[in-house]
Length: 283
Image 1 (tube, one colour):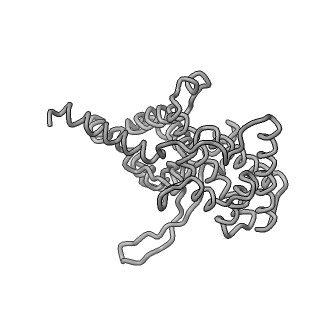
Image 2 (cartoon, rainbow, N blue to C red):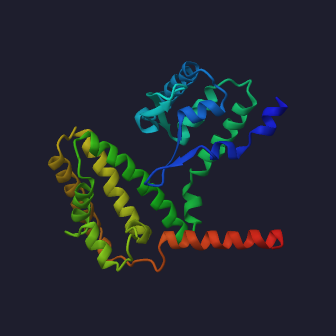
Image 3 (cartoon, helix red, strand yellow):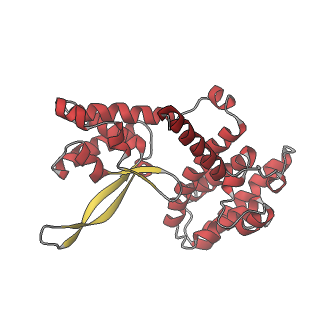
């Protein structure tokens, strides 16, 4: 047991963490099973099934917490075969370690790790109010990334192939005909800059509302077909715009673009942390 304690740290779980194109964290089940010392995949699947049941009992959508994928694996004879794997959210990992063999010290470490990481992602209204304007932007940007990730999965299930056109339909509705490229040009952004990284808190909130309402409409109305899904996205964007107008709010295209993008703020923060680290090390 002492050997396990000295071999595993919090970084063990960080080392297998993956980041998708929308900035969302996830873990592969196969990677997690090895760290939790499950040599037999079938035994790990029993734990995974218990975690899925716990997820359902908690009122969460299991399909949003894990995605089955096929991966190529090389055998001893150099032959490659498809093997089953799963992409897991942080919450699903938390449920897995809660249902894993508690006698393993690494499982106890995993329970602590994922419990803390899950709590870090939660934020109360009071905590939110205490954030700076830039911190609120970071928080809302994270929510829009997660929202877009889920919306794309729903849209894909509805038959959408051209995601760029699908997203533009929503922007056109919300921004009075502007596409993502139009917004990019109006904000005078540099090459490959992300428009969402260059929105203030209110503009991000308006887009998040559009994203979530579109997802709900696609699911509730069981929308099928690319044109139908695009029409729904445009309609929702337009209704969000109308709601802003009805309460006398500022139109999203009129909202000021922050002086610094979130990517730029991230770079500055990292540079400052590196500088402080070097100072502490006496470099």
